[in-house]
Length: 505
Image (tube, rainbow, N blue to C red; front, side, top):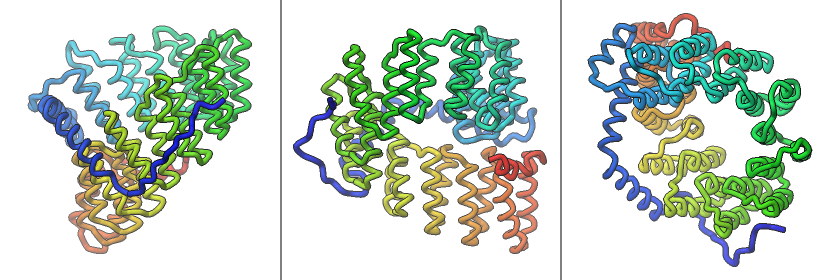
């Protein structure tokens, strides 16, 4: 029994850009937001910008301390959280972030929040500074061990699992016995979740069977393992095993199984599971419907996905941004941009607002169809509404600019990234420097190179070598010496970092 009803009419819009209605609504919301909240938010953002600029420009600990003291900025937990998140999302230098974290930690009477600790550990993990992670955890345990939680452990495990073996991940898990207040089933579930996300379902299941006798598996344990299955048949078998052990499935359990079915293009099975949920007095939620919308797109039925978006309201469930994004994705894949933008209009009307993921769905299609005009217009409208692109969108755009040799567009994207601190400087700069060097834009390449270093990011050695060759040919020895000195700030240990990373991939 299905959950859909046929609609008598269908939309047939087909235009490549956002409608005027969408733009007006977005601009109106943006204006009201600025009117009521801009002064306070602006002040706090200015403080974050000031501290971040100090951290990325200071060359010594002494200068850092003096600059922070003379800045007049009030150091609060909220400020520290935001500065560390700025480092995280702009892929900042982990050593600069750590110096700030330790400097603040040493202030009398100051205690970091759990969020600040977890963000700091994430930054170090992404930079593969695992030795420093254990130093930070040891310091935290001495000062306030309550900050070290299962969530903290999962942050560390995820970074370790991404680049290390399963055995090393389990060894890291064991080391947390002496750090977390309670080494219990919650910690075990964190390990399993990490293995599901960063390794394979087989690894997660093997670890589950080898360690389950040391813990008492609960509903969350089974839900974690259910979310990692790729095979519908295997997921169904595990679902039954869960019942046999006396663990009653909940909404999360069913959602995991429905998601596996939808990703496996077995939408009819998903429908039957929804009916089974209702028979057990479990009401499907927005996650249930979002999975079904996505599944309908995978089997080439975007209109039925749109129907679900409408008719889920009849069951008292209202779509969120993720549900709309799933339906928009379906229409983007089908290259029915009129229908996709209609749903974006609807999001705005309902106060949801398109987010970075929404826009990224369009950028992906525009990139693969080589549609520069639509991508550029959408990017400009996105910036006008105050929604900043994520790293993937930036990569779609910069690669499209390089493909069509659009230097001015590439530089405008770069300038926005520098001004507003979004995207990955490291990833985008490699493509940008390739474009600038190919087009002989040495002055622009040098400027962007220095801006990147001033932000605390190390350009890749490949990019540096390309610019170096051009500077040598142009006999710009003084400029080359300046760039070499700037690169030396990052230390000799990073010289072969890119080549080593590529060898490990």
